[in-house]
Length: 395
Ligand code: PSV
Ligand code: MN
Image (tube, rainbow, N blue to C red; front, side, top):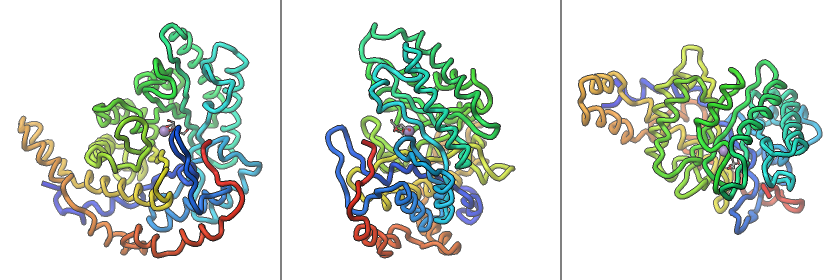
């Protein structure tokens, strides 16, 4: 059974869903084997923002763009924020980067050399300076720190240094700003990683204070991990700060969210809603959890790749909202194993695509954003206009 009243009963809860797009999704990307260029790829941060704003125009779902320093480093962030506003979006999370500098070969915030640690700390302080100008709430930290060989590093010493470095960064945050610590179980280090799991991230951010929270990147878990359990636990502990959505088949594939396993996305979103992490369901009208994408479009066109992604999140959110919670609770309390499972599966199998198309049209959005984008000519125009210059990428 799905919730009584079907789609009409949950339509209002879809209002205000906001998904943050990563600026790097619009630049070229690839694997360690090859980065392919593609016609129309942005040469400037402004062009990335214009593309992100296009995703928002066609879907109404993506009002913010996350920046990555140094990939998006500039000399006038106030002007960049004003440009974004003109385009109809705002600047969101600032992502730091301590993984592309020779000094960080053996670590950044955990490095044994205090000079390297200070350099990594200073980079984060620069990111907070940017946040002060852009009005961004979140500083997201993902560390490549780790080791490749047993005995290479003092695991415990590194945790202690991490705690010290994070404390310096945390102290510099403004009252409305947050530190969001992302975990990842391997890569680029293969033997150990300094923030490999939600527990380590939780331990580190808990020691910092209330405005330090965890980022859950859906691609950063071993195959078979029950990610929705982690979502439940972090929400229960008040420490789920943000999602980096994407999907994976093998490693940190950064493919389109919901492409590899829509059922997993549904299960995650159900726990988000159940745990109070979904905005419109909250009494105060918004949730503190940031819904970001962290994806790369290596072979497909980037803008439709992002449009498809936010639509996938919306579609699974709608299905998760359709779960008949009262029926579920009854079945669970009666020990009705298959009945409870059926309540969840009924919602998952509900095709909401036609309802969502109508919902969009009612709001002046295209019923089929993928098609509307393809017919809009935007792709053709950027391919014709963006000739010369250097295409941006993460390399
Ligand atoms: C590397 O794994 C990564 O994808 C992390 O998930 C970060 O969020 C992202 O890069 C941007 O730095
Ligand atoms: Mn990520």
